[in-house]
Length: 118
Image (tube, rainbow, N blue to C red; front, side, top):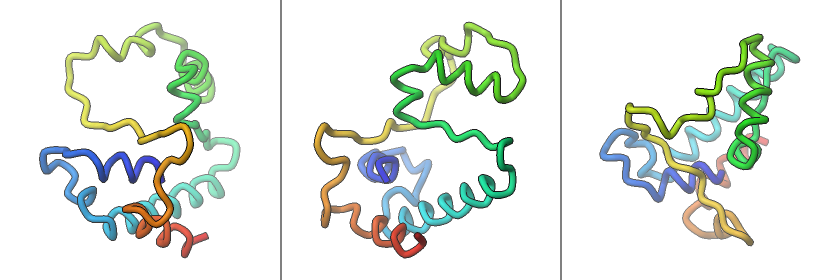
């Protein structure tokens, strides 16, 4: 849900039109959630879930975990994302110390859509 809020608040220069409509965001979130559940059930131990919070707080540990899971060797360049020359079109999830997004606020539509699935 934090990612939905971050996308909603970000102007992507028309790259992701679904991010400007809360109903569309809700549908995309529900579709994403169903897809993740499918692959978790289908792949079992072959599926690796990665927490965004863990990735940004301990990127070296999480990168090593991902590479190990995939059977790939460690490369220092995995931690040198700042050296990339290609543009990146992402937005970090919105986070606050108390609440990620206000109850009843703009994220109520995606929240309701997600609750209908669970």
